Amino acid sequence: MDDFTIARVVHVASVLLWIGGVAFVTMVAMPAIRRQSKPDDRLAAFHRLENGFAWQAKIWVLLAGASGFWMTWRADLWDRFLGAHFWWMHAMAIVWLLFMIMLFVLEPLFLHRRMAESKEPGRDFARLERVHQILNILGIITVIGAVAGSHGLI
Image (cartoon, rainbow, N blue to C red; front, side, top):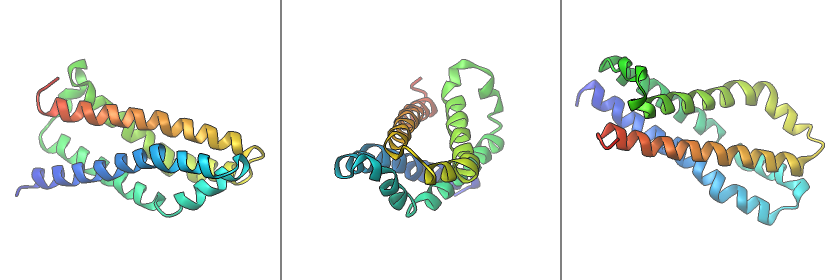
C-alpha cells in the first residue's frame, strides 16, 4: 500500500464515523429524546448523551480533514476547486469547515455556556435539532456527491 491508499482508507473511515454519527444523533437519538423527555428536560438529556461521543466527533473531523488535505496535495488536485464540475470537492471542504468551526470554536467558546444557562431549554433543543437536521442533509448530499464524483458518475 502506498501513502495515498492509506490516506484514502483513513478518509473514508473517518467520514463514515463522522457523518454516520451525525446521522445517528439526528435521526435516532434526538427524536428519542424528544419522545421520551419533557420539553424542559430535552436539552439536559441531549448533553448527557453528547458527552459520550463529542470527543470522537472531533477526532473523526480532524482525521477526515487531514487525510483529505493530504490526498489533495499528494495528487495535486487543487485545480478541482476552480470549476463547478467538481462541486463535491467544494462541498467536502465547506462541510468540513462548518464542523471544524462548530466543534472547535463555537461550542467551546459560546454554545456550551449558552446551553448550560438556557432559559428556554425546550426551544433551544428544537433549534439544536433543526441545526443537526440541516447539517445531516448537507453531510449526506456531500457524501453522495463525493462518492459519485470520485468515480466519474457526475
